[in-house]
Length: 498
Image (cartoon, rainbow, N blue to C red; front, side):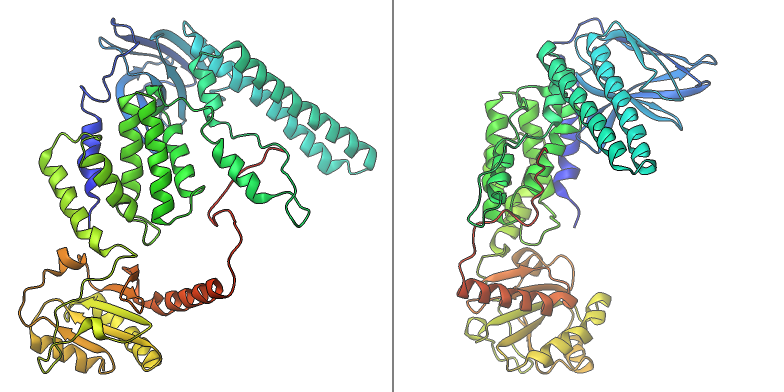
């Protein structure tokens, strides 16, 4: 099923009145950016700004003459943010577009950062001065590393390590001085926003070692310290998306309750920043990532985001029909989320006797929705049969429900694949809308339920049914015998500065 949110909302974000043509704080007489790139000629360059981390929006093109000269210009000022000049076959160079929209740059294709010179834009002068200084220190560090490989005696190693430490100190001191001297510049804001929290020495845990949970919690609690949610320019950089993604997907346990808590935390920070663009992007990006999530069971966050922000009007959607379509999708998802009790299907067996679904006694019930003529269903059937036969009488039941075709096709499927040990069901009344009632948009669709018919997993591949069930059994056994100690999420990645 296609991603409704991305399809519907991307164009909304690019509407002139709402998104890309914001001119707050920019000059009214347009822009003019002249460039000269030595080694480039007779081609076309594109000026574009980031939209999150993975997309960019073209704003102008410029023809490069035989001497490497180009001009980007327009009567309307550019939206502020981090821009790219896409250079054919050479990659791209970055420019900060802020209040100064009349400036020039020159560089060389041999090393576009090292040779960059900017005139008329203090922001870009600082932006490249910082990169060039760090690049210089990095080159010196690479030389020292090469020497360490060649000179292995203790005296040389000690000396080279000291020199390496001196270079690191120079880099840290330069960064500190840069931020101190340019606190209000966007270049400094970018630097602070992309830096990771410095974690102080951790207290000792009961085992005498540094407390890793304390380290993780400190890192997470200070992850957003230097990010300005009031600055709309971050929407047109890769860094807002990048930080949201890391915070939600790496620093948060991938279960609905934890995800909802942290998503609301981020949206509240965006709302407190009082910038509609940042707020809209934060809500949009989080929601888009969990409409069709990679981690099973986390689409509960998508439902929450729609109901709390879209349905209430906090997040504006210009097309009412689109909002209705997404609402219908949420209405289908909500009763079928992991943790919900599966609505009992109205089905009968091959003799047209009603099957009392709630009365099925089993520690695990697997519900296999399929179409008798579906190619994928037919490929999956032998694997399903093996699982059915292996676990029959061992506290596991499989309910195989044909969602379409004729009763004859259904019975033919059962006989062909020898599924007699399964509980085979069919709705002879043809009243069940499986798509909307059970979110069966593709077949086969597999649910796994516990003894109370609560959904443990949904949309499981048939080949993973047994693995998931055994994993869940081990998990339940571990919880029954020992209360787990507090730990950071398995997906956590917190860096500690040494």
